[in-house]
Length: 160
Image (cartoon, rainbow, N blue to C red; front, side, top):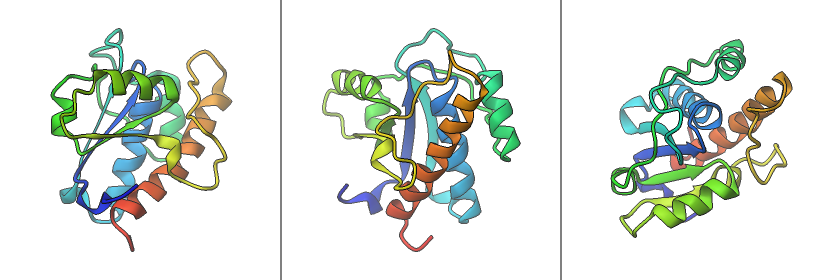
């Protein structure tokens, strides 16, 4: 991805904004905080559907994330038209979300990318939805996100 040094705001997106995208927000936020860059980024998450709007992240995801030291405090919300203008980078968790975001975008400025374009040790093309699976699915999602978020931050802020 070109010109990543100018990214100051990142929106992570999955379908319902209760599993993958709040986890990505939490993982990336902690990486940014640990690097001393909290003042340099706006970080949020949203879903392509609004079914879970106002709800906390899934309790299984919160539990798995807490086990690794991440706090998932945001409440679910749906992607809004203004997000494409307000965020420099919108990161989709899978191909379906990517296509949905592309359909919503009206050329307002944000770049839409896939989460698995980042990282090199997870070996996935998409961040799988753990909602209907067992606890290992949430751990797998966190493994992918830790790798991808580390790479994303390195690309956005080399040397950190």
